[in-house]
Amino acid sequence: MCCWHKNFPTLWTVINIYRMLSLKTWEGAMNDSSTIPGKVLVVDDNPVNRKIIITILAKRDIDCDVAVNGEAAVEMCGKNRYCIIFMDCIMPVMDGYSATKAIRDIDEYRDIPIIAITADTLPETRGKCIKAGMNDYISKPFNIRTILEMVDKHLNNSKPG
Image (tube, rainbow, N blue to C red; front, top):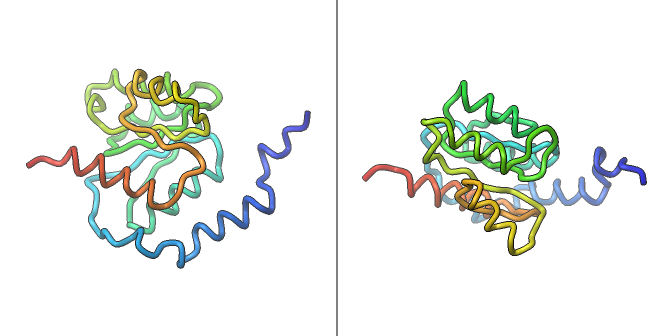
């Protein structure tokens, strides 16, 4: 079986991404102009998914770093401080579950929100994410509002006072 479709988005995918990122789609999703206390780490092996998340967050002036697999994410967390992590679950080299467990072993990351992003919508997947140490779960395909609501929900919960 050919894996071409995994590496190159279809025309329909490109059209949907363009529609999703168009200005009209942003109406109502960007009404909160609050800032966040640091950088976000986006961990996903799919460059299209990374680009979508980064573009959504950039509309709110949120700065992001990216990692292409769990191993790279663990290494980046050892060198940098992030206020929230969006973590794909299924990736080569090291999956998101193992990466989350390793990141939780870093003292500074015991309480940092890690949000799972996965195409696996089976009921037991959410439990597997929580058991690995993730705080929440987003299923693919996701939308602008869902990503921003997760940022607001988890960063507002972690603010002092």
